[in-house]
Length: 116
Image 1 (spheres, one colour):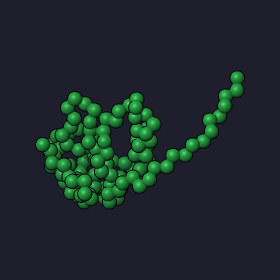
Image 2 (tube, helix red, strand yellow):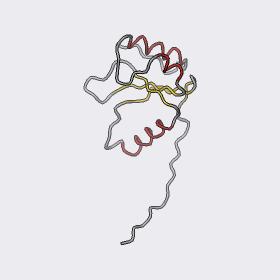
Image 3 (cartoon, helix red, strand yellow):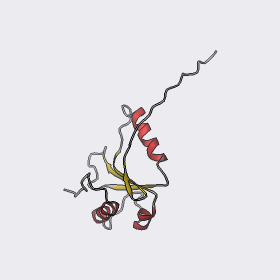
Image 4 (cartoon, one colour):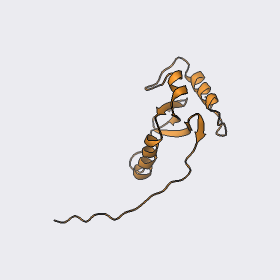
């Protein structure tokens, strides 16, 4: 059974160290180098699912800011009945500090009527 960092661990370097130990010399598509991980503004740890045999270890994606994550969560909200997520966010770090979603705000507006 893979060792997963407890949810109460907010130590960025502990998460990175566990990722590097778990994967060792193995690779996955888009696996960043240790240097890239340590210098990225936003680092996200994911648990991949949705396959017959899900990965045992967490994977990492790197981002310049939180925009892509905001889009990811919005897509999940709008399309989840039709499109199951292939990955689940386990932890998000911005500037090496763990962050979480603090609020979700949905704004509605009228739909423009089409004239024929």
